[in-house]
Amino acid sequence: MPADSKQSPPPGEGPGAPGGPVPLLLSHARLTDGRTVDVRLAGGRIEAVGTAGSLAPAGPGARVDLSGYLLLPAPAEPHAHADTALSADSPGPLSYASDEVRRRATEAALLQLGHGATALRAHVGIGGAHGLGPLEGVLGARRSLRGLCELTTVAVPGPLTGAAGADGRALLRDAVRTGADAVGGRPDLDPDPVGYAEAVLEVAAEHGVPVDLHTDGDDPAWLTRFAAMAGGLRAGVTVGPCAGLGRLPPEVAGRAADRLAAAGVAVVCLPQGGCAGAGTRGGAPARLLRSAGVRLAAGSGALRDAANPVGRGDPLEAAYLLASLGGFSPGEAYGAVGAGARAVLGLPEVRVEAGFPAELLAVRGTRLAGVLSLAYSRIVVHRGRVVARTSAVREYCDSAAAPGLPRQARPGRPSGPGSPPAGPVVRS
Image (tube, rainbow, N blue to C red; front, side, top):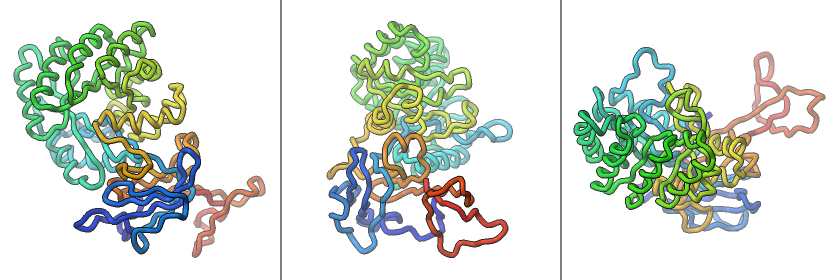
């Protein structure tokens, strides 16, 4: 569970001084290439990387011991639904009041931050009786999360063609002026999907913002035409989750993937399943897209809302599913939630090397495959300071059937009826 918020955080974890975060040394961290290193952070960036024990702390006590942890570039979440997150158990109709959306969005972002995502892109519905209220709620959450993670928004309007189209287009422009970072929507639900996409691209070009459309991708002709229209947008174009591509014949899906790659359109797949109900639990053909040269990222989508009441919002789960079911190597799978996701969000690359942003995730384990299989204990670094810590302890009763298991003594441990088992303790 997350560290007790009532405890005083160690150096590097509390709010930084007016000049910025406290310089921090991450010692004895293991990298994916097998090296064990010290990593010194300062000014929100990685200042130096050296062999274990070679770097001095930046100040007294400004050190986190990462012995037993694998240190990775922090993942990002490229496809969240902050306005509906954590609402599966809500009684009665779901409230889209700004303060309720802000509460849900804040809680969801903190949950995903605890998993390791230091940057998130949230699709937010606008229009109808709610107007811009949900967007204002998520923007309020972004303000309250400043310094903990980067939360950006995609405005998702209703119809943009036909009788209601003019109002929808005006509202989309208002959303950008209000603070939406990107424009998107659901062309599949509009009577004229091509016209819908044209309207979104027009608003994006006017305001210089990216496009991120929510589409099943089951119409290769539409995808091909969209790729042709979107190729010139400099701010970036993304589509997802494109599960429908996986239901097409491979040769048809392959041609559509080639068009997307040529136009520079990125695809965000959702390995845990779609975010529009149980009928869309399939996934995009990630290997086919990657082989075609499409810029690919993986996200989580629904987080315990009506579309998926058990969604986890965990980037490592998305990577696990790509490796377990999608045929990706552990490195390729983590790249989809790490470098791939950051690229889709327009964020700078992160490597555990001097000069790169200090956006890091330490997970208890020694190899990436093991981390994707069983990753409980995590330490999250954003802008050079520890912003979240999760620690898990597994205990077993004493038993002759389990000799030689590692034990970790705990001073002052209670004994007697009702106390925890006094057997081996394994930290995970």
